Amino acid sequence: MNNLVINEIHHDLVINAIQKKTLNTSNLNFSTLRKFAGIDSDKRDELDRGRLTIHRQDLLNQYLYSYGLMVQRQWLHTLPKTVDMLNDSQYQNLHIYDYGCGQGLATLLFLENLTELGSIDEVTLIEPSQIALQRARQIIGCVQPEAEIHSIHKKIDDLDESDLQINPEKMNIHLFSNVLDIDSFDQFEVFNKILKDGGTHYVIAISNDRNCYGGTKRLQSLYKALLNMEQQEGESLSVTHTQFERFTDTKNMNHVYFCLKIEIN
Image (cartoon, rainbow, N blue to C red; front, side, top):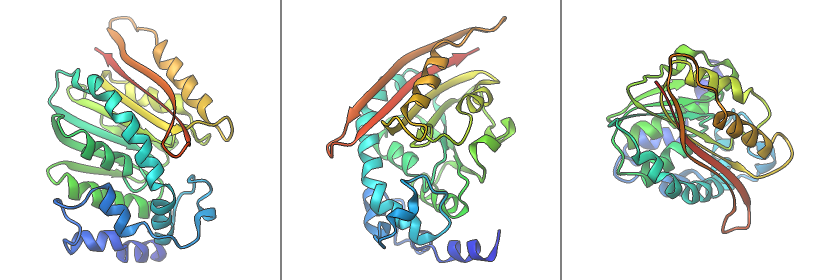
């Protein structure tokens, strides 16, 4: 880690606030986080429509200010539609995976809006931005202190199967928040790694609905591929609770999500 990144992490106002207990398990949620660190420094253009791998704290704060409420609207619309799927499980122990997690907003919103699930044993955060990943680790560790937090500083294409540590005996929840639409990695290959050892998997993917820079067609093609997976010899395969929806939020922004449950035994 270079000195610039070390300095950014050391002076991160969110991490410092968590360490000083200003932000703590009883008060840290999405709204308090954005109120505390959503700071407009007039640098939205530097975020490349939210796709930038962030390397400065002021841009983390700018993302919270500029895009945080959009992310919140996406997940508040989608999460109620996943309840039946997530309740269809024989497992009480959960492992959440957040791909391209940024500051951990998707996991944070998931945890605060779906409180009736089983025990969150593990959370794996995957992110190429070191300072975003460090902030995410502190945030999720604060709101879920009993969980084991794994942080993987990699691009999605660089993930190894060993990084994911999929346990077929757990409820594996995979969150893709505004990442599958970005045309910078092989979305099919990451699912080959996720599903290689079987198990029970719940997938929730949300993005802006658009027809450029990758866009909705990437979600559509992946969704169709998952629906049409072929059962291999000697295994049982089911894909259930399938949903694919385009929607417009309360600010007239267009989004798309899909969710499904995959069981391979």
